[in-house]
Length: 266
Ligand SMILES: [Zn+2]
Ligand SMILES: [Zn+2]
Image 1 (cartoon, helix red, strand yellow):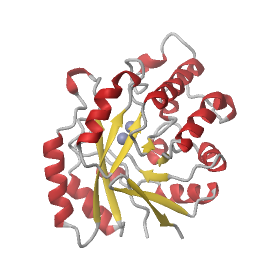
Image 2 (cartoon, helix red, strand yellow):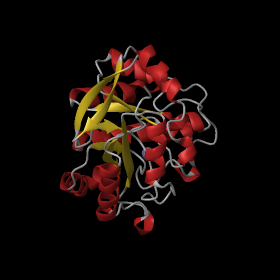
Image 3 (cartoon, protein in one colour):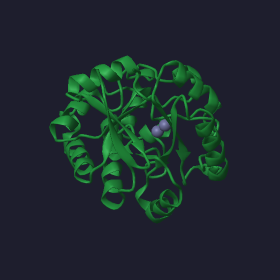
Image 4 (cartoon, helix red, strand yellow):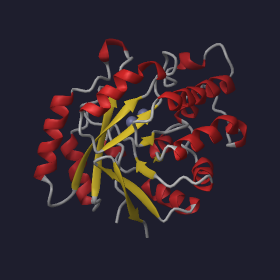
């Protein structure tokens, strides 16, 4: 059975034009038991670029959920951009809607998304990466209403000069507390296979970090392609499966109504 894809963008995200129904049909074809939509919601981009149209989102996805209920369980989630300065707004938003699954992600860091070259200007790549990890710690200090932290080393995809010596030890003063706090608060991480499609050709986080997470006692883990195009749906899930096993997991998680379910892997 194919691992269920729990991180997907559709035409409800301004950086995707994918029709959600096409993703569902593909998931049914691949015999996935579940599929979860996680469109972007962000408060800080210009012109409300990533503000999710909640009414239309739930109406559309609930209709599709009902239409395909005999073939697949459609779950409704969100990828919420986390910022320490937006805590009350974020709490209010997340608690207002009946999400199955909430990915908390760091995109906007002190006003800039590492996706843009500007994030890395006038400093070393090392300093920029440290700022990203520090912002995750800042978020974890003040906010915990999420289920998994999204692509925790997303920042390493984007420097002009990739950190070729990137490894756990180099950033362990951030990564150990990040993973420990996530574990302590009963939350999880995801294996985001979008990284395989970027310059780093590795998942976010890397296999090394997934292994450390398990060693530190982490037991909640989801898998998502972060597809913004239909063609990226479930991409590199064979590698994600191998990574789960290599890290010592014999299951992955699916979230329904914000509660984790263990799905055994063979
Ligand atoms: Zn993201
Ligand atoms: Zn995403």
